[in-house]
Image (cartoon, rainbow, N blue to C red; front, side):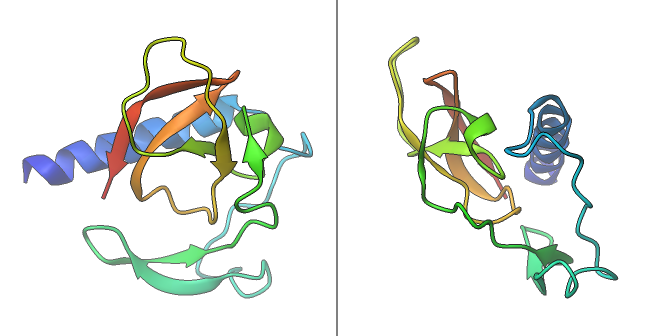
Length: 118
């Protein structure tokens, strides 16, 4: 139960942070839902620890080198390792809109601590 609560809080934090980060086009994007999934080019899949259905949308810039999330459709993720505070970091644009896995978020060329989201 503790892991579920931690995962829920982590996802909610990522959602809150995503609102503060400018998108690559600086325009509001339609959020994928089960109803509009196919129209947005996504597919419905069971995801996360709870296996809930969600619309998974692949980002066009997936895997592109980045130093900040503003350079990506999604977030800029670094590899799951410990970075020294202030250590320069280059990441890759997140592959889909799903936040699951263990990644360091790269912002302004520096990595955050690794966050694992189930």
